[in-house]
Length: 344
Image 1 (cartoon, rainbow, N blue to C red):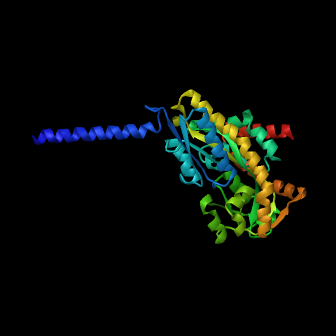
Image 2: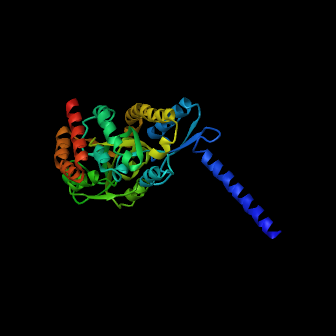
Image 3: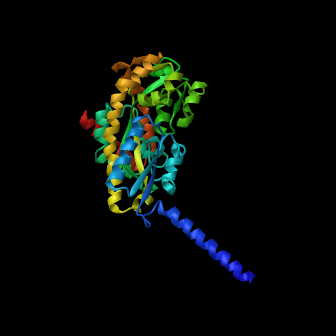
């Protein structure tokens, strides 16, 4: 009698576990309801062009799949640090992200070439190159590491911010500057005699406030939305590099969807890119720069002669970076440089 009761209890437990697994899988696979879920993470606040673009992406995907792919957006690194979110793509705990190119450089170094100083002379050139076959080749380098690159978004062009005046590269000598963990950015500041200090994005405000670092670099959108201008007195307009974002998806997850849905998701990411870029350009003029000036920051604009000096001093970053790449990476870097030169 006791044996029969034990067998009955074991049978009930197995049934309950099976039901739980079925429900857990139903949110990620078609199952009986044909609905897939897509957790989409990014590192910016909700009142930003990034989040607005993520909302546009969500709307496009859900409309075009008739609700069969449901997108949940997780802003402000709610799914973890940038590295943790990218690792989540690899292991399948995160389905999609929009994160800086530097977040992917640890997984394929060549993707970090977008961060090279003075690579792009202006936003229009950057977008034309990154939206072309050359940009597709950069994104394709993520496939071997379990990620599918879909599109390039952006935060805009970066500016120096600091607690000291900046007019020439020599002003950085001996200073501690926060950078993302990307050899391109580290070598850029080392070329100017600064100490490059990788600090996670969410910890940056406190690091600036407490004086752990003397400065950092970011586009106006980030400087304002993260309120870095409150703890940085000097902001010279340098436009020394573009802060590119890659929209990528877990390759295993994406390949589990019907081919039609895969195409819709990739295309929606691409379509949201120009929307985000237009928002950034508009807000830089109408909101971000006025906010910084009204707060009382010392905002100057580097002359072409000053920019040329910064370009000359940081040029060794190209050689350092190229020396770290494999042959295909170096070939891709040259292809990007050639594409930029053809548009100038």
